[in-house]
Length: 402
Image 1 (tube, rainbow, N blue to C red):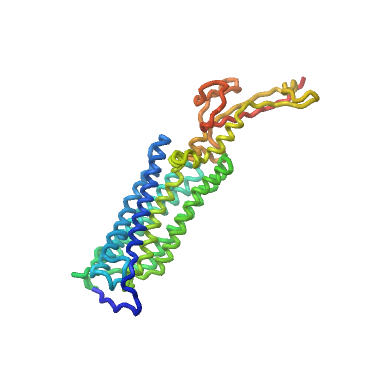
Image 2: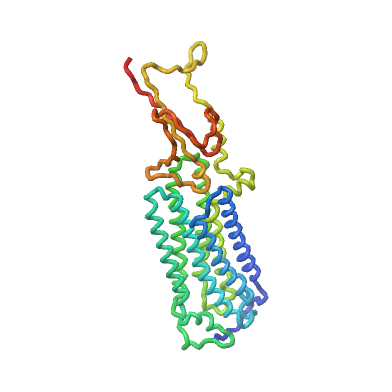
């Protein structure tokens, strides 16, 4: 067992940050759990079944909870957040156990969140072959990173239990009974830098495809803004790396110097879950706010205002007169319809194809090519309501000799 040096001169042994660690860990986890619940409710509102990305984000709550319990509750209850000289004898032992559990919980949490986002991208962009390779590559990188850091965490000491038993206050292991050979600073770089890099790549991945969506400019900006909220997670990761590099696991006052690392680690995992759920909350927020958060409300109003009949006219001395056509031209028309409800709700990119166009929903065209049948419209001649159906008409003029 290590012998503690005397406390530095002028240190305040009554200082405590235990409350800040516990409150931060518990509150951020409950916020993450709430948004996951709201995500599920939003799916129920839209009558959408849970898919792989949803199950992965739900699964992320479990290891994140283990992280909170390991550092935010167990270690804090035994002395984390106070100076080691004011702690009980088993404070460092409890800190080592809590850190071991928290590290595993952190790595599994981040892995589940990243896979959930990639699964969402796969579902959203699945009609685009060009996006499959980047998703595959990122998924493999995340998987390899997770395997590497988990194995290093488990086998950083031989035997594994030596990670905490060397600090056992009653029966500590002797130095010749274990080996701990992992350089903590290199390990911190190895687990934090790939996390930051993959965060940036995953944030950048959807942006080129969003710009090609046939949506109003304000709606595009809203979608981009939702994804860019994830930048906050990257900032948190950078701040955590800063404290990791500054940290020293050999510091005698480890229960005090480790506080910032503990805080930012638990915040990163829970905020990652929170931000990953934001793109799915519009339906429930729209109901709570009576439509204030509806991304398509403005465009729907414009469509409703402009959904009248098309009239062409020319002016003469007697005023405007309806255009009756020109015998030199044979006119034909073609109509097409597609649904925008899914694109602006849970699957904003589902119908984008490789050429940048949107894939239409199935329609039935009559043999003469001049009419279509829409199953979503109840009556003929009725104005189109803002229910997500957009109708466009193209007129073709062909010159004929007379």
